[in-house]
Every structure is written in C-alpha cells, then in structure tokens.
Image (cartoon, rainbow, N blue to C red):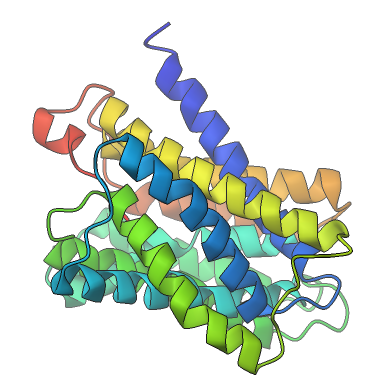
Length: 306
C-alpha cells in the first residue's frame, strides 16, 4: 500500500489543482473581477494554511527578511499572475488556460539560464522549442480559438506563467530564509490580503460575502479550498516521495484541467487545441528534471518549492 500511496496522492492533487481553472472560469462569469477574487482567495487560503502551520509546529515567522520574502511571493506569485489569469479567464476557454499554465516549466528554463541556475541542455532546449510550437498552435490557426476571441488574451494568460516562472527561479537562487514552502505560502497569503484589500475596495471589485450567494461565489470558495488543499498535499508528497516525483503533478494538473472543463463547462476543442496540448505535454516532459526514482536521498526529500 505504501508504494501505491504516492501515486494515488499524485492523482488526487492533480485532480484538485486541475479543477481550479474551470472554477476560476465560473467565478468570472457573473462580473467578478481579479482584485476581489484574489482578496478572497488569499483570505480563505490563509485561514486554512496558517492553522496548518501551527499544527505542524512551524508557525509563520515575521522577521524583516521574511516579510520581504512574503511580499515578493504575494506580488509575483499571486497578485500579478492572478490579475493576468482572471482577466484572461473572461475571454479564453478554461481548457486553453490549463494548457497555457503547463508552460511554466518551459518558461522557467530561459530565466534559469539567465540567472546561472541551469546549464545548457539540448533535451531541455527542445522542450522549450516544443512549448513555443504549442503556443503557436493556439495563436496562429484561425480555427484554434472560439470565434471573436482575440489572440491578445493568449499573451495575457502567458503573463501569469512568466510570473510563476520568475518566482520559482528567484526562490531557487536565494532560498526561503529557513522557512518551508507552507510557511512561505501562509505568510504570503496574509501579506497578500493587506495588498489586495485596498485594491479591491478602490477599484470597486470587492465581493460582498453576505450574499446572496450564487454559482461564482461557491466557485471562488471551492477553488481557494482546493488550491490550499492541493498545495498542502504537494508539500506532504515532496516529503514522502521527493521533489522530482512530486513535480510530475504538473502533467496531471493540465490534463485534469482540460477534462473538468469538458465535463462541467461543456467545452469542446478544435484539433489545433488538442495538438497544442500534445506538444506542450511533450515539451514539459523534456524540460522536467530526470526522474531519480521514488525513493530520494535525504537532501532531496527535505527540499520543497514554493
């Protein structure tokens, strides 16, 4: 059973994380916009993650350096990509958003090379090239996107992937000041609340939690809970099976995201989009670290990523 548990957990985490894209599509369907959604996403996430940190005996630390880290993760890892992804979700099919999100590992590669974190690799270069081909399959053919959807929104959606890639590389280079991933995300959630609250109020995007509640409200809450739960599960899985094994969840997030969109949103896709999905998955497989096996060495088992 122990040998099966990591694989079952990987599937469950991928399914939960993959569901957040269709839920985001529902959340923006009735006029809710990015700052209001980001604020409540952070409130719900913080309400779940902070107690989890306390239960683990690793509370959020509030030193000057830690606060700087929280601000960076909140802005680059949540607020800015949230603006891009929620804005794009208004216009693009949820499945396309899931496919574009899989570009994060590929976009991370040139940033890692520029920062001196990675050496040149032909295998990863071809993975990046396949990622570009996948994006081209979404952008260039006229039949790839629904009628009337400007290609511009593909670029907006990719901005969120760029921010995630930048966040990951900066943390890989300078570390998390002795904090683990869950502590960082919990602290960033609390800081993000302070950042996003005035933005939501000033722009008139604040969402009244008193109701009446409708589909978008439930979708927002469900997405926030699933995200926090999936992330917590991911951190647990890294400790159980290693970071390289846990990183394979990126494939499942995309595949489940497309599947849930088809089942619950009734989305259908052209052959170009299916081709883009296939090419992007191939690209991800090339840029991902080579698998070292389920049992990792002690150093890798204790490594987590934000």
